[in-house]
Image (cartoon, one colour):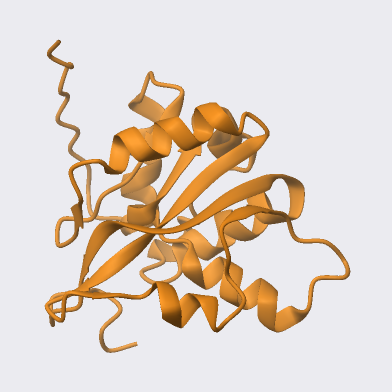
Length: 169
């Protein structure tokens, strides 16, 4: 069936503010974000929904990705940094580097989050027209309070061309 599409316009206040505005207008139970220069593989949404259905205790599911234009899966890279498939939550015993890697693995374009968890933790950081790492603020709050399901299965094509906002940071 056809899904309703709504175009929302606002002044440029950074990616966090734009994503928060879209999330505020969303009526669904799961939120997923896609940057204009990246691509979900055809089964991404079905994969995310199936994982969240199978793990009702998970606030979000984060999927692996293929780096473009090299067409290289980054799963081995993340495995070497301690990321594995399964549920994870930050605790006081989590080594700092593991926490950094877990947050770095999560990106808006590869993470589907339950709308109630997104709203509970305040959405993306949007103050001072934040242009970089606005998502890390949200992921840290989620990981400190809820479980996240990590999947290394590549479901997204991440474009590393010069148009990426973080390229020069």
